[in-house]
Image (cartoon, rainbow over all chains, first blue to last red; front, side, top):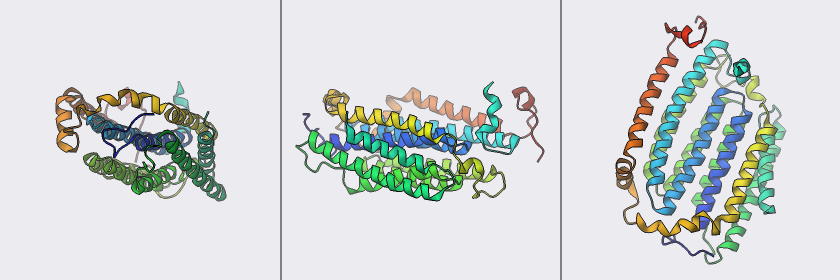
Amino acid sequence: MMMTHATSSFSDPVLVRYLALGAVLFAIGLVGFMARRNMIMIFLSTEIMFQGVAINLIAFSRYYHNADGQSFVIFLLTVAAAEASLALGLVVMLFRQRQTLNVDAWYDMQG
Amino acid sequence: MDYPLIIATACGAIALYLMMPRGQGWLVKLGALIGVLALASGLSYLTHWASVHYPAQPAAGPGIFFYAFALITLASAVGVVCHPKPLYSALYFVLMTLAIAGLFVLLMAEFIAVVLIIIYAGAILVTYVFVIMLASPSGVAAAAVDYDRISADPLIAVLVSFLLLGTVLETLFTHTPHGFIAASASGVTAHAAHWGGLAALGKNLYSRYTLPLELAGVLMTISLVGAVVIARKNAPHTHMLGLGEMPAE
């Protein structure tokens, strides 16, 4: 069995709990991404998945006493902000065309 | 095979399947009940797992605050996914973000927690709420329309994602003590001397990750330009993008 870490306040069982929480959050977001039909809700579900990943990164950063995980979360937030601005602009543009947010209304875009 | 874990995951899957918007209230209540059951069984599995694999640390739990914040996070994430009204989903998302910021404070990442609140709860969610207001068909933002009341393929979605979740959790709980964590735990103390705090994060960002930081700036600039191009009404070159005619407003 593995021994405790130099930083005994944050032990392996605690890390595993955080990782499990991140995984569950990712799964919930994935369900929303696939099952919702509103475009805004689909993008909101991707944000849930982002948060699950961020929990993983921060937990590992705490576990290894390394700032890399926090740096990655900074980049993750940057990408999330860029994605949200572009995606919501697209949603507003698409809504202006067909007056609905239903993704099935754009079924003809499959080419 | 870890049957308690699989049972807990399956309970969560059934709960989420029942709670997906379908237009029937009692199913949601039943789903919430099964969800509580899934959480309880998962929690008892975690406790049992920790007592089996780490007998040296009898009370090695993360404390009451972790459980409180994790409960709020999961409940409001389910609320985001399952609420038939998008505006309420956005508000649940704010609640989830606040709870996750609490978790980050517990993980000694105070700066990330503050940034998360400012960017997510402050900026991104305000944008979402504005778009929900702008792009609501009837003009009433809080009214649920039929494509929000009835979800698309809840069975397939729940099956796929909880299969993924079951695999991840199974791997995590089966292979963790001899797996990746144990293998790389020896190189831990390298950064331990000056780890925490904003100073270390800033030094890390501007020394090891200078180029990615600049690229992030470029990405922000590109997305700014792209958002302006997309949001322009009656742009002169719209037909070249194949967007067709914008409806008159």
